[in-house]
Each structure stands twice: as C-alpha cells, then as structure tokens.
Amino acid sequence: MSVQVHNHSLLSRYEARVGDGLAGIAEYRRDDEVITFTHTEVADEFEGQGVGSALARFALDDARAQGWRVRPLCPFIAGWIRRHEDYAGLVV
Image (tube, rainbow, N blue to C red; front, side, top):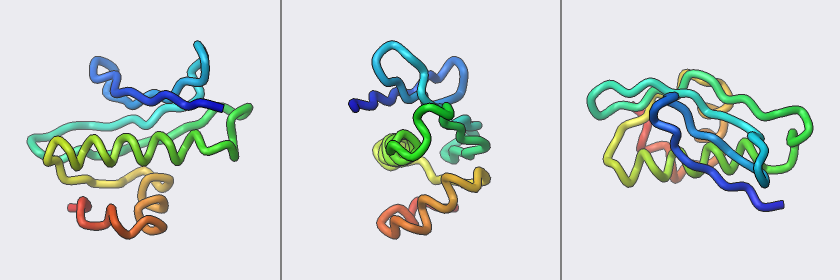
C-alpha cells in the first residue's frame, strides 16, 4: 500500500491519501515559527497499516525542513515523537 502525504495549508492539516481516498489527517495551528499539532485521525479501514506513522513522519520532516518548532498537543503525535527520539529536538 502506497501512502501519499501532503500539507493542505488552506485547511491547516496534513492529509494522507491511499489512491484517491483520504486515509488520515493531522490537523495543526501555525504561530510564527511553531506548529501545534492538535488532532490526528486515521480512517478505520486504514488503522494499523502505517498511515498514522506516515502522517507523523512527513509532518515532522516538513517542520524540520521549514525550521519550525513543534508543540505536540495531539496524543498521537506526542507519542510518536517519544518513540522516535531523533524528532525530540523539534519540541518546544
């Protein structure tokens, strides 16, 4: 299964797509150089298939590339960062 993730900045969320279907989202707020992740959701039919991890990795890699700091209010993103220590330096 190929998961494609992109930043849909008009809706303030990262979207994960499988084929033409929306498989998951990671919503955020941007303030200056801080991106605050508020909610992550994966469609039931894609649970446990790596969609959430693809969203988190893409969003955090994007934050790093943009020079943004990260405020992980979303429990999923916060937990993902705890399990992937190389992203801990992004956290405000």
